[in-house]
View 1: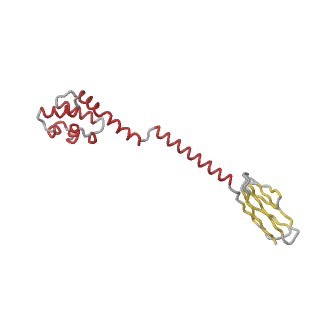
View 2 (view 1 turned 60 degrees about the vertical axis):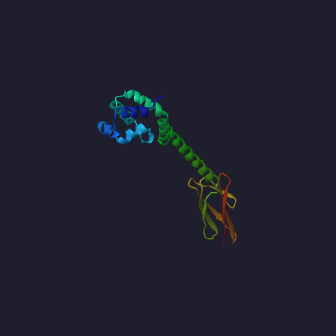
View 3 (view 1 turned 180 degrees about the vertical axis):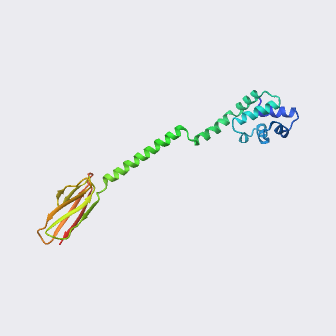
Length: 196
């Protein structure tokens, strides 16, 4: 089974033509003529130029251009296909784009779940504005809106912004006040102060 390169080179030598002469007459660059005859696939032009140049070269040598292109494709079809598969792997195909989008959605959803898990399991933030000592003091503060607050074991109402306030009457000269905020997960933050 004869190869396209052999047929082209034989026809050229039978007509006693040089590649330079053919290049000037057909306007096909010399490097491509040499690549066709030496089977140097790395130097072949891209399609459709490769087929067109082969047809022109075969026509100039008096060969059937369709036969030469068919033989050439038979000889190099597997190699050309392998080369194209490597290129298409790196390009943005619909499947590749879909895979990237799905992967990003999974990563974002996982990050959201982790963030919510950490937020749910951390102790609540608790800020208390401690008053100066007097007979009646008002304890004010801020915590997470989902938390429950106790001041000296007495439940206090927390508004939707997380603010709370409670007036306490102090009967002794020294009073210990404990403010405790508990999250829905059961994590607790405690602040205490002795008012004198």
